[in-house]
Image (cartoon, rainbow, N blue to C red; front, side, top):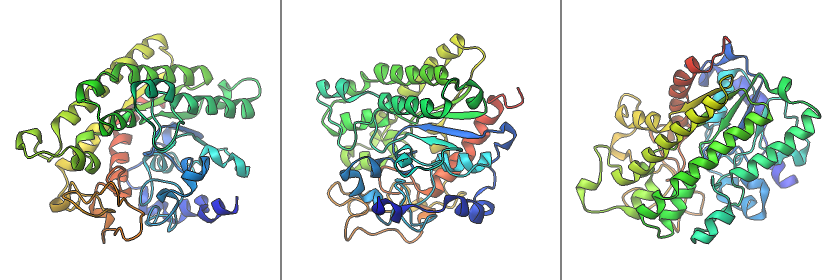
Length: 372
């Protein structure tokens, strides 16, 4: 337990000290959310992975330079600082939500709970393993996270969660990107990987239905980021064929995979909305928010010359090496992370998450029915 206390910070104090700097352009206070609940992967894990196993505790996410910008120490967030869920908390006037695994330390979950885990997939391991897709980090799939959420609510609601959760916001994702990424990196063809989309989206759709059963009345379901823009994929699947890339030097066929997922996800959301007309369910457009960073990179003061590169990394065209990843001995960090979109070749920088959060809040606020 003492090991984890080293990485714990007084998030309430940090919130008040830094809110003025980071709150600009973010405002969900009119919604009067009193709790946030998060399901997902490394893009929203506030510390579950480093607490769930010895492998997690020994991972790079539990060491600097992860967390260096905002927290000045690692928290288990797979970035140099804050994540989208942290900015959603700021926008809602709430303190940052703790990872569910912190229940070991008897943390007060009055602001909600985060079940997201780095490396998590939408599909469970018993579905992926027969397809010869292994899970390198965790088996805490979306199904497992939902079971953990059910246990959590059983502990705090006792009888009825409806009243307790009517002013909560549920973030179901982003999740699913790892299903596709693991498949591709383990040798599956793009056709084989795309065939996973219906099952992945159905799993997310079932998750929406389950959180509604738990008592959720306002839900945001984000799509996935453009997979063809990530340094890890650009490094692995790069080609000399210029026609394979778009104007931002992203691989078009991998971005098409993200688009296919997101389009099918939006249709799935509409199905659940028809089943539950009194429940507010909003699609979160992470894909186009990311593309907006690329389109407006110069105005947003990103380093245009190094736009596809990771800030924390070494080697190759994209500053990414599978054997020498961020956090390993001798792997450098760029001088100014605020000028980079990618933090470690997989996850984004705090600055990228901040701007995406602003775009997300602007998109979802009119759809959340906060005056209802």
